Image (tube, rainbow, N blue to C red; front, top):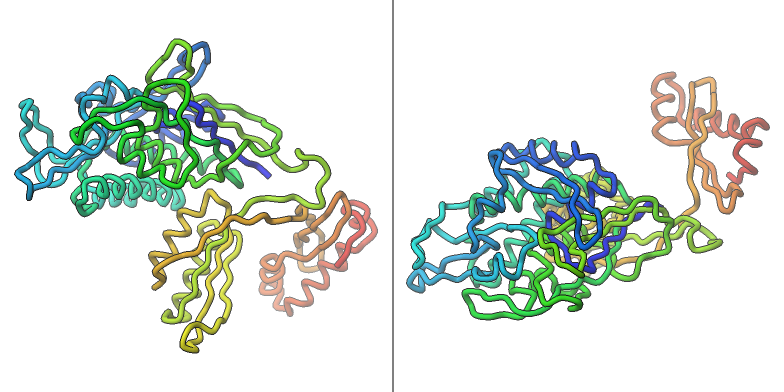
Length: 462
């Protein structure tokens, strides 16, 4: 099974993730095409840099040909809001004074609630993009559905964290025009790169948040700053090595959207390693994010079957029509779910209901969770991680009087345990030749059992 491991020993930021993805083999065109699809005047510049002796990839976001971070003013580091009912007091979520001093991974989104305001330092900023506008921008882009879902999920996490810090509705959070372009590109291009890798499961180390303090409009806070701390709730974090802020809000939001399993690196045969650079270049501390990609199958010695981690999501419903239930199950499968099941259940007060269960790879769980919450009437979804034991699977084409039919073969240690004709192949052949589907299935099984096929596939058990 193909897996990826994110090593956050120096924290994580959006540009670091982009760099690591490119360094691990994601074609630059994948990120460039995703950026161009947004149609916001943004592009990428990619270079090789040195971080404390480590050669790695640095990704810069350009806005109209100029570096986004060069145009972002010192305080435009994170989203913030202005509370109109408290005399236009500034209420910055993540601190202005620390933008260049303590936090130099990249310039992140910066925002405000309401219209543009004049500050005491006589600088003003334009009205920015709201979360609704950013969501619409991503939805309108020519991007694959899973890429859009991951990107929107990350921005929603970011917006809700800022709104919670300020105690304002999330739609009052606005992202400053320049900072928002930087964050949108980081999030959307990272989502495109993550899905391009097409790994079955993501894993991550605990997250080094750094140390020291940051100066915010709210006062001096310990690292991580407020919105970042909220985004990291429930995730394993620690502080080590440097007295600097290592995790940006965009980095934390992307990590939550990817939804990896946290812990030590799983037993795997590593094939590719990518290093993504942050902006800061400390003398004795490599400011990089590392991604390792490889295969887990057979790497931990002999196993009875291939084991993988899957996410199980379920919710019980007693007020949804069968048509909607069927639609949700079909849509879940179309969006990458491994399986979707509808089970009749008896709920409270003797009401008949349906248990919706969706099985998926951890990387797809955020998008499918949103699907369930959006398309059904549920108020919550139960989510858990489980181990799944799988036979090795492959397809063997066999020739029949109805054409070529694929037979799916499941094996264990080289011994065939199960074999079955592919239903879709049989259905298409039955329709074409106007015969019963069972005739095609029987013909495929007979062809599979022929000596020459049996010798190729091993002893079949049907």
